[in-house]
Image 1 (cartoon, rainbow, N blue to C red):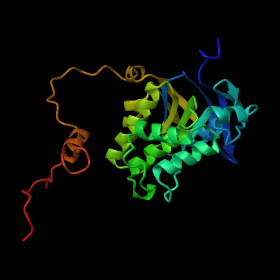
Image 2: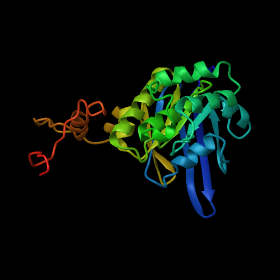
Image 3: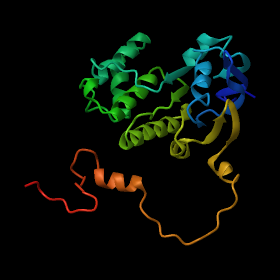
Image 4: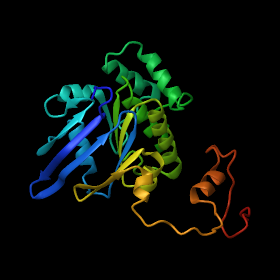
Length: 271
C-alpha cells in the first residue's frame, strides 16, 4: 500500500496504565485519509489518553501507532510536524485580537506572509468582521472557531479535536460543527473525541466506541444501526426537534430574526 493510500492514523494494541489503573487495554483502529473519525465514550473511557499518545504527549506502555506514516514513538518530531491538536479548552490569547493571535502563530512557525494567512483563516471561519476585536469580547463559539483556525496554520494533514464542544451552548456547538465539516470538505483528516452521541452522528464518517479502555464497536453510522433489531414501521407525526425550535427562535443571533417568547403565557410589558 502506497503512503498516500495508507490510513492517516494506524493504532494497534495500544495500552496505557497509571499505576494500577488500566486506561487503555489493547486499542485498535485505523482512520482513512480525509475522513472524520469519532472516538466516542463517556468520561474516563480513555479518549484523551489515546489522543495524547497519538500526538506524542504521552508514551504508550505497549502497542504501536503511526500518524501520517510516522511512528509516534520513534519519529515523534515528524509526527508533530504532521498534526495539530485542539484540546478541550480554547488556547487563545484574550489580550490580543483574533487576527493578532493568528499572525503570532504563523510567525512562530516561520511562515511567509503571516498577515495573508491570518486574513484567509478569518474569512474561512467567518471571523473577518471580528478579526480586529480583542478575543476577550468573543463568544464561546467564536473562540473555539479561532482556536481551530490557529491549529490549521501550516496546513497540517491531521488534526485532533479533543472534545471541542465541551461547555459550549447550542449555537456555539453548531458553529464548531460547521467548522469541522469545512475541514473534512477540504481533505483534512480529523480525529474527534466526544461524549455527545449527536455530535458523532452529525460529523463522523466512522465511529468507534471506547468503553473501559477497549474499542467495543467500530463502523459507519449505518453499520452501527444494523447492530440493533430492525425498527417497526409506524406512522408518526413528526414534531419539530429542540434544535429546530432553538434556531427558529434565536435566528441569526443578533436579535433581528429572533422572537421573544414566554412559554405558556403571553408576553407583556412590565407595569
